[in-house]
Image (cartoon, rainbow, N blue to C red; front, side, top):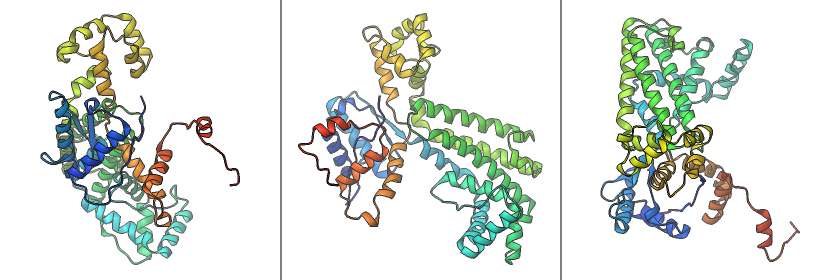
Length: 396
């Protein structure tokens, strides 16, 4: 099983659901892929993709139904994108606004920035600088809040020398909110980092989110009981009981938002669990076409040992097709699910460096080739490439 960028299409006009479907269909034809083999589509939730009547997903489902009326596609919303959207329920804009203005005051002018760096060196601070917060990157917010908290004394001292007063730094209530914001964004950054990268199966990503939801519920109950064991930054300011109740409610609201947003993954949760834990899942909860095979599987001690010692891919590929045809089919369906659009986002980042105003003559075909090379882990077969050439020119 290989996780790679399969194709890329250039769209210079409109990007309606019909336009997108035309390009997807052309890519399927070019790659020789069959619509009846399609299992799932993962998107970032844009309306032209997910529209109920004319969106790309609706058109793809209609295309599949033309071939097999009983085939239902699994539509997933990128789990990383949803995790970032959940932050909207955290009422910390009054903290973020002040931090952003303060950082901009230090970084916007070169003289201020140089003098601030010199001040940190004079104090022999652990940190040598302070970074910007990028609104579109949730991960950066947690890092900036943490850095401002660590350098709050130096920032206040520097701003006073510049005649800029930051009254919030003297406000115990605001500082408590800042400490809470540091802790909660640190928790979310840890989850965000775990969800990134290639090689993660959808069930693994959803397990990380499920564990995070349990942590939110646990932390909410701890704050109600005035326990700050897992809130190291908040512990430094000794918040009042009213503040702790407010923060407990915010954790509860964040938990509810996570619960609301992952309905698409919950719809296939049982089937994912059956594939990730076939020897402990309940046969009654499994799809009817695999129940008898699952009983045979769970009764085979040799297969149970093989499951413990190897990877999921090795285990399911080792199952004999004549004995476990339906379990193998379900495993294929679940293991090819994309839990996120990470491959696409990574390609966009690479494209920013490769397609610039200094390379305006780069054609769509050349850009696609450059991005394929930049994002692929597959090693080229140079011997075959050389043999395929009629002649070689060594002049360059």
